[in-house]
Image (cartoon, rainbow, N blue to C red; front, side, top):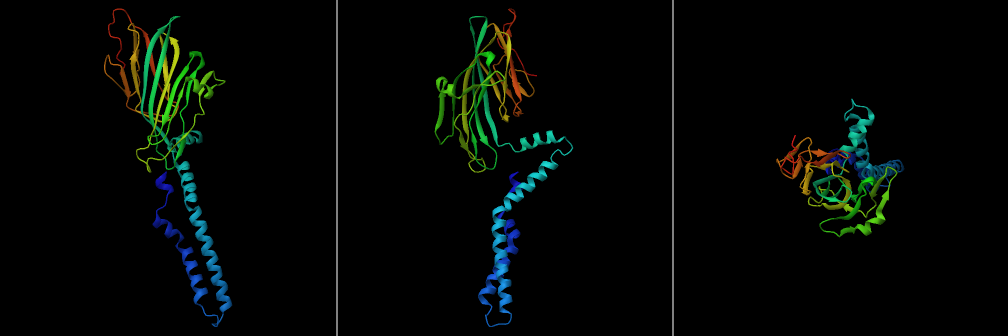
Length: 295
C-alpha cells in the first residue's frame, strides 16, 4: 500500500498551497498596511484571521495529511478488493495484502534413527531468513510448537541480524519460554524480539533463524511442516535414516530427482499452510532407499 498512502513533496505542496497563501497574505498585510490608511482596524482583523487560518491549516494538514490519506486509501482498498466475496474472506485477503514479514531460503532437514520400543527419533533442523517487505520497522522473534504426544525436545534456537547481536538458546535456556497449551501442544514463545527494518530502507537486512528439535514417532508415519507466516520456495532435505525405510515428500509444485533426498517446492505458502513427509518400511525387494515423490 506504500504507493497509495505516501505523498510526494510536490503533491503535499499542492494540497497546502492555499493555507500557505493565506498565511503570507495575512502576514504581509499586517506588516505593510499603514496604520493611517482607511479601514485599518478592519484590514488588521482580516489579516489576523488569514494568519490564524494559514497556521492552523498548515499545522493540521502537515501533521495529519498522510494519516488521513492512508486511512482513506486503506478503507477504499478494503472495500474494493475482492468486493464480490463475503466480508470474512475479504478480511483474510486484506491481512495477506498487509503482510510485512516473509520467510526466504526456508529449509527443513530430517534425521531419522531408531530407538527402543519400535519408535523413531526424528531430529529436525529448520533454517530460514526473515525479511521485512513492509514500509516500516517491525519486531520479530521466532516461535516453535509441537504436539505434546510426540514428546518434543527443543534443543536449540538461534536468530539475529547481520550487524547485531545473535540470540542463542540451548535446551536449558528454552525451558523458561516453553509453555503447554490447552490444545496439548508444547510451545516456545515470547523470545526477545529484534527490530527488522524494511527492505526499502535496508535492502540486505535479514533475520537469520535456526531451530533444532526432536520428536518421537512411529516407524511408519507422516509429519507436517506448518508455516507460521508467508514462506517462499521451501525445501525438505533428508540427511539420514535407517536403510530399510522409504521417505517421500509429494506435493504441488515440488521438484525432486528420483532417488534423491531433496524436495524443493517452487511455490509460496501462506500462514497455516503446510507440506507433509511420509516414511514407511520398504519392501525387501525394493533397493532404492528414497522413493521418487514428484507429482
